[in-house]
Structure formats: C-alpha cells, structure tokens
Image (cartoon, rainbow, N blue to C red; front, side, top):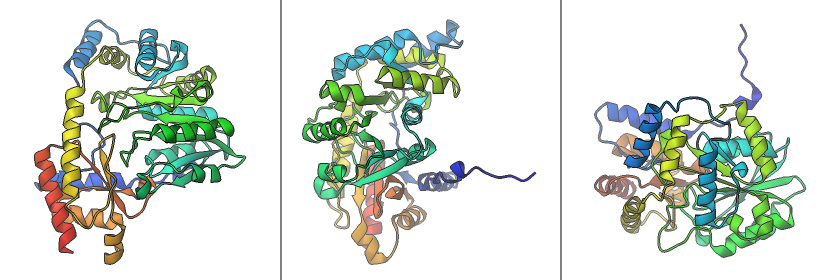
Length: 391
C-alpha cells in the first residue's frame, strides 16, 4: 500500500515545545533534577466542590449523550456569568460548550472562513492560532508588536495589514505568551477597526481571571452594540479553575455562527463529556479562586524581581496570565545561536526547561511560565542566570 499524507496535514508545523517537553521528561526519568518553566497549566488541584459535583453526576447515572451544544442549564448559567461579570447579553442558544477552548477556536474558524480568507494575528501569538487558520483554509496575516509598546497592537500597523480578503482578527487579552492586558484605548481602537472594515472578532478570553497590578478585565464585546454583534467570545475552565484535563470550553456570539459551530461539532465529537458539564455548573456557582490568583501574583512578582537582576534579558512586566516573555536577541546574536538551540543547551547542561518563542511568531525570545513553587523557581532562575552569565 502506498501511504500518502495529505498536503493539509503536512502543512501543519510541528511544535518545538513538544520536543523540549519530551526531552525534559526523559531527563527527569533518568533522575535529573529538571526545573520546568514550560507548563501552560496551573499546578493547583481542581477545587473540591467541582470534583464532588462530577462524582455525584457519575453516581446519579448522568452518563448518556447530551445535546451537542451542551445541556441547557449549563448554557444558561454561562449566559448569567457573561452578563454578571462581563456585561454581555446572550441567551443559551447563543452559547456552545466545547472540548476545551481549543475546539471552540477551531470550530469558529471553520464556521466563518472560506478559502484564502485572511485573519489578523498579533505577534507574539498563541502558537495554535496560525495552524487552526490554515486548517480552515484561511491565511494568517501577522501584525508584529514590540517590547517598547508592551506588546500592545499598534493600531496604524493593524490598519495597514487589512485587505479586501481580511475576514477576522483574533484578540487575546490577557495574552499568551506576553502576559499583556490590553488597555481600554487599545480595545476601543481594535473595535473601531473591526466595525469600519466589517470584520469578525474572535476574542480569546481564557485568562480573564488571571490579572494583576490592579488591572481589570474588559471584553472587547462590551464596547458597544456593533462590536458585540461581530465578536465571538472564547473562554473555558482550564486556567481559572485548574481543569486543564477536563477539556471544558465554550463560545458565545452570533446565533448563526453558534448554530454553524454546533453543526460542525455534531460531526466531530457530538456533546462534550456529560459528567464534565455537571462539574462546570459547580465551578460557576460563585467559586472563590482568589487564593490561587494571589499565589500566582506572588510568583509573578518574585520572577519579575529576579529577572531584573539578569543583565542579559529584557522583558515587559506581565499584567495577566502566567507567562513572562524574555527578549534574548542580543545574547543570542553575540553567541551566534538561536532561541531553540539555547533552550536545548540550557536543558542539557543546566536542567532548566524553557519554551523557545519561535512558534509564537517571534524569534530570539523564550517564554517562562510561573505555575511553579517559589522554591523551585528560585533554583531554576539561579541556573538560568548562571548559564547566561557564564557564556
């Protein structure tokens, strides 16, 4: 049999993150004391009330198929959350529950894009965005941001990248990998552009509850009727409730788009796990996650203050999520190596795992994640500093 992989599948870029993660696991299994700054997930356990709700659902026999977009009580509860916390008015029929935020993102792109439609991305971006766009037949169009502007999109640069093929933009605030939280001024500017050029806005709000320095989260969809009508809000439970393995996300927006996403999902996975949906109801019941956020903030402050002692790195202080993006271009150019090569060398010699940011659309940078105890963080940052200063 002649095996031939589709051009579509071959066009999907492999992730260097997985390569680093796999090697770090090998070293750990060999007994090495690896400190990992690579994880994109909280290190806390899922709250007890959520686990109890899941166990109760299992014991009560809630193990059958549900409606494809999710059980109505959950969608109505999500609508209440969006109204109360974000000022957004949706009905249960404007919401779909998905297998993680990833499926929501994938399906909304499948629902709105035709061949070669363009989607604006603000680099650095989450590494899955461009691959999802390509898999939907679209074309990612990158608008670079920069450290001096705290990685906020430059509105003039955004306008300059719009063509008659531009269909949508993806807004991710708080942002992975920069930790940037867009100001109201930036959000209003992006909303004006979307309204002027009749663009869809996909607002990835997965880190909305992880915000620091007194900043407040604001959804771009809350900035007026026009932008509300053209925004699809993407969110989930993985980050805020430490439920990464539960695969629980959702999308809210235009009724026709949600209906199209529901049709697509009906041929992919049908409904998401029935037990997880019951657990989600418990998570939405005014659960207090302030202690987790406070812990992340302490870790963020520790990491930021330590990094300020390392002359070789530059960075913008993160305002949200749980990442710091380090600009190492001067160091890397001096030593004639890439961020990926440095990450591999750092892992092999110092047993510190970091993520090279090439897959995030920016060369010469690495991403550090701080869902890690301060004790381990201190060890890892000390090794990083010694590595950089000894070259």
